[in-house]
Image 1: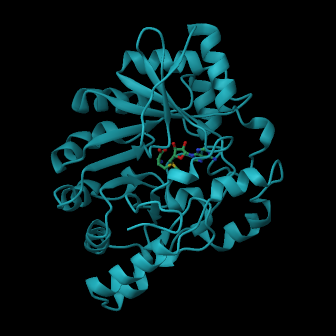
Image 2 (image 1 turned 60 degrees about the vertical axis):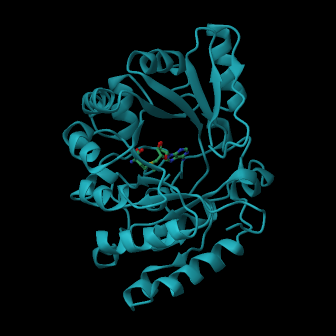
Length: 339
Ligand code: SAM
């Protein structure tokens, strides 16, 4: 099934909670938030029923996210319900890693396929400043556990000028030591990133300059047909890393991702301000065909190119006008719809 720009429906990011146990300054900088009402959060059976419909329409990759997905009680039970479904080729999890060491064996046993851990700094003081919690050791334990159980992992790092742009090389070296491929993400002006400014974006080209000054020639890996957000590169010794240049070089043209929030709102773009309510039809007893019709109509009408539209706005703050709205509608927050 294709949208108006010929992009297939393939990747579903499933946010299982809007709660988080960190307060990263680029994602959840405020002191308090409006949370999704608990009674609106889908039960696992409901999420699983929606996943069946998405799989029937062509989704074959699912990533569990949040908020912090490991805060959702008994997440392995959801993994178990989803992992074996026909048509699913890839089931991944994005986590801040704080609770990972305790849950990893159960997640693996339930059928989770792979793990990405978000980590922006290796310095304890900086981690505390950036996230407001002194949990760097727990993240290291989570990463060690991921390596033990899966053999390898991905490490996602938001590169912010003046915050951690001096740690790209230590992070690459750390990644190497734990068999983790680091992916540097450009700081995005998305809902919730109320401290974003263009000067704070450490761009793809700045990242490549900094790394090539230290490591010498960097080779771009040719991955034709890839819809992955990260462009991958290799250092001379074969170490690979990625860059997700959502801010300076968006990849809307190949974006096959959509997002389901914990309360069953479906967003066709990370920047979309309106979503499709799937909880209401599900709870009033819509059958599979009706749900398929709603999702198919949504995808076939999709023309979103949110990150490209954001570039076209230049240095203006796109999300400033919605800061008040964020308070009223938690769905606009990155931590609700999943990064
Ligand atoms: N709590 C989990 C985690 O930390 O990975 C999953 C949710 S988090 C919202 C998903 C990803 O979005 C994280 O890697 C986070 O760094 C990234 N993210 C959040 N706000 C961002 C922003 N303004 N720009 C770029 N990436 C951002």
